[in-house]
Image (cartoon, rainbow, N blue to C red):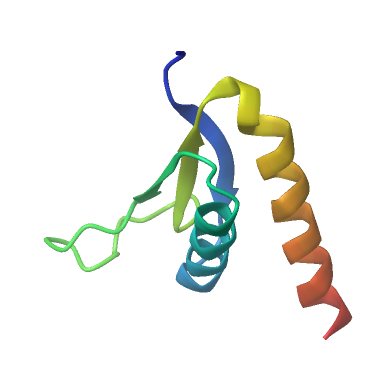
Length: 76
């Protein structure tokens, strides 16, 4: 089994929650990593809200799911 690696950069907590729900439903092992620092209350949070870590063999499926989510946001 490989190591978890960064797959997609998340823009906000809403994307993170949606991705987490879908990946859990599909039994895709993953970890959601937030860049938010409680000590600085997000003041120095520069790039994105966080990211998804997963096994390399799941990266393409996760990227496809994320792209579908972004496209659904654009349609609204």
